[in-house]
Length: 342
Image 1 (cartoon, one colour):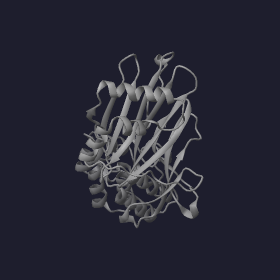
Image 2: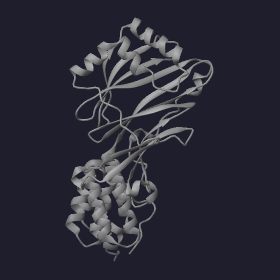
Image 3: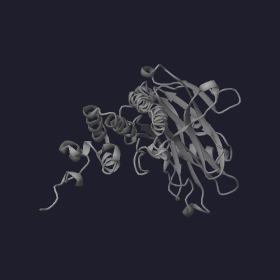
Image 4: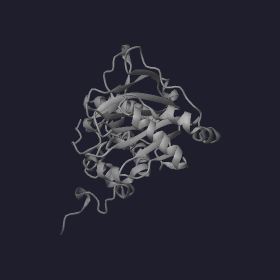
């Protein structure tokens, strides 16, 4: 069996980097903020039945008056919607409270909003965002047992908040054989620049909302606490995709195809799993199935499919087809199909 080149989707190093588009984040406290107070904190004030989040945000930086707003975060990562702004006096009062308590290593905004800006909670309720309890960790650990996709049999999974890296708080997902995490994929990441604030986790309909951040000791106050989104379905798909990659590397195409199918069942929009399933089908002489999977992958992200497939040896036979060349953005047939000059 021919191994894939490192430039293709079968590069194992790719696994774990695609769970959330927000993982590449700017530093919490940019250099230009040195010597000036920076206060930015978010709080989850409600979740919809479908998993969207209503988030209060206080922002005080750059010498502008503090702003307190109610934002709506989409479960699928669509643009954030600004729903409501607090009156200036309310924003100032909440800002003063957080400045006074700002060195505490615990989230502060939710309680301040409940006490001083109940209109935000009322608006969230009117829109269907209900207060939800935080996820309950295992005793003494930042590990949270959950169940995977029902269509895959609700496999036991575990979420873990990792604070071992001083520069970031990461939300990780793994399977739970015997309670030990053997492989993990990253769902969300919050950049830290200071002492970590005690994180909170909310889970609703397959969406995980991580609240985390940091505060610098001393003066001026530098405090940033924010919300990051993670898709459990995408993470579960990444886990199965990783198993498929291992099976592929071991030469077991049937097992690899089964794992890629499971990844697609968990998250039908996961391009890497669709592409990998197409490659496995092509190597198993299931040409029409391979082309169908390629079409599905290209419908989600045609540019990525073109990058992965143009020189992939596993698709060598398929690239003779005009419809596949069109999917891959190829204008000419493969060299071996071009007749030599007379």
